[in-house]
Image (cartoon, rainbow, N blue to C red; front, side):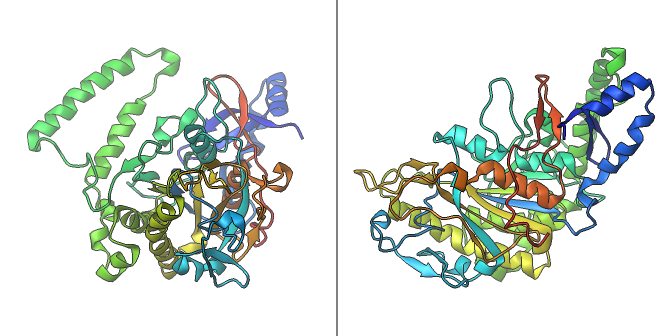
Length: 438
């Protein structure tokens, strides 16, 4: 079948229609728009199958390159383990690294991908690859998967003032909208124990009103100066300003306030920024956010790998287990896909400083919820530390294609990018073992 390309027509509901090349040419030849009628079926692709689909995505991002050998793919007793221990999980025969006991007790609720491969071993390029499903390309910035979901699907809640795409503790690598536009960039916040930035008036009363009136004059002048064929009642800046103003006065801001959660629930996540970020992610998807990303950095362990990885694991384990438990308790787990991912793994062989270096040739990811199969282990790595045959591995783009398919988004559709090049939403292939229940 010939691939589909844009032009793309955007509608208020947040979905897009992508036009088949042959349909475009046929319509041009007929000189009529009647050929567009069948395309209305694409307006709600997420519901085409009639099956229940997930509504939200939570990405736990382990920045720096977590070690598969100390987390989700230990090889106790093998040379590559360097003495690292493993623990049993709720799934018979499945072991995790020491320190992941709480997460391991929930192993039936998610699956582990142990054969993830990437062609990028540099941090910046690998992060880009993992978050977008594409390798960096000159002159084009690809959108992160959360941006794609926000672009392709309507809001999870009809009336919501919250940003749909949110990054908590983003550091230097927040997810971006790329060529879909800055409006799909993740809204960034730091430690949820602190107030949401930039939502309080800097001046009070009449001064704020006068400032908005002055801004409106500038906006009108800008709009009047646009070409007639680009003119619209409101500029994108005006629309963004309106959304920001609604958020500033919205009661839904309370979703960011983790202090409203019971004290016992707060403590279960851990008294640190990452734990609070996971609790905030739960509250935000409950309130209607489409995609929330929470970052735990510090995994780049070129020195003292075992000790430094364990320090990260001690933060990850209680927060991740509490997040899964919280989603299930609120009946949100079937509506939410949870992905725990990193840019690459760590080398099977330690270096002279007892650290592990970058290893994109076989690492791990955790994925669950949203109706995906749980309790499974997909792929394996070599106890001798050899590279995985790429044909037998799971590529990072395959993870993207799987998530998009679970949401009901056709990953084979093409966007027309700003450089005039049609580009598929994803170049991966869905992982059938994960989609067995959908």
